[in-house]
Length: 124
Image 1 (cartoon, rainbow, N blue to C red):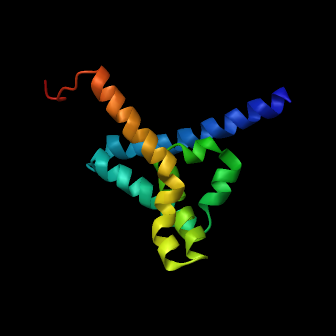
Image 2 (cartoon, rainbow, N blue to C red; image 1 turned 90 degrees about the vertical axis):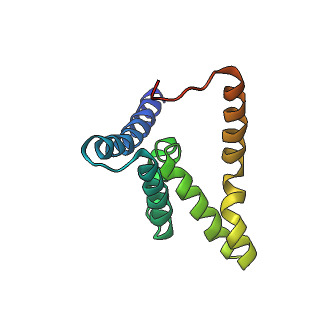
Image 3 (cartoon, one colour; image 1 turned 135 degrees about the vertical axis):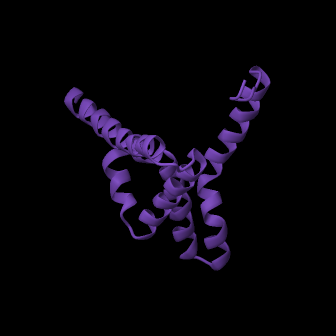
């Protein structure tokens, strides 16, 4: 039981860490901005899910694959694919429906932290 739990944590850490390492390499060794890297990772998650690959990564690594931004792309694509089985309208709204909880949490936490902390520019 303990060994299985530790192995699960190891898988999550390795996969999530590998995604972050790729992003850090792109930041350090290319002129691609952080915003573009986020978009590329989101699109990569959606595309990998569209071809059926990302689900295997999620099944293997769990939160290691769903927590990074590529996991958000996966979630949007997965919701759209499942919605498309029912109707065109659900294909369009399925991604937002499946990601609604995460979007809501991001908005609420962003608002709360904006009230708690004083924002300032990085250039100061």
